[in-house]
Image (cartoon, rainbow, N blue to C red):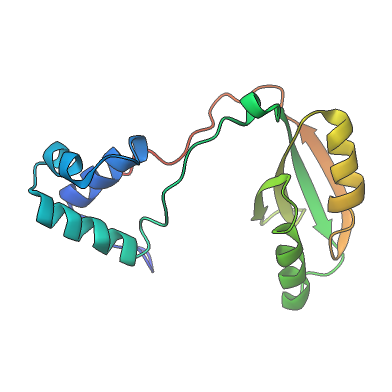
Length: 158
């Protein structure tokens, strides 16, 4: 078990499996599906929330139906990778709504960003006006996604 990892039994895993597909299920129905009564199922659900295994509940939005079907992955190199510079970059990234994901990478570049916009013209504005203006950005390289082959939330935790 890794540091910070929570020990889960078969009922906990069953709860997570059901909720990953049906986040709006009632506790009564959840209990029936996993083979427990309501009270222990509810207690396990609360424990999973308190231990940070379940971090929230939300609707899954289809960005393509909203006209946001242009996806680009951006390699970012920084001029400074000391802790203060990384904190400044991380904080600024959180303020750019078009950046869907940001990952610090162990590679020849420092960050990989997933950026979602309406089209290439909108992406060029985001790159030029927002990403390039982030603290300590030295250079960027863009890779445009042609098709999403797999793009799903965590579903199988077994």
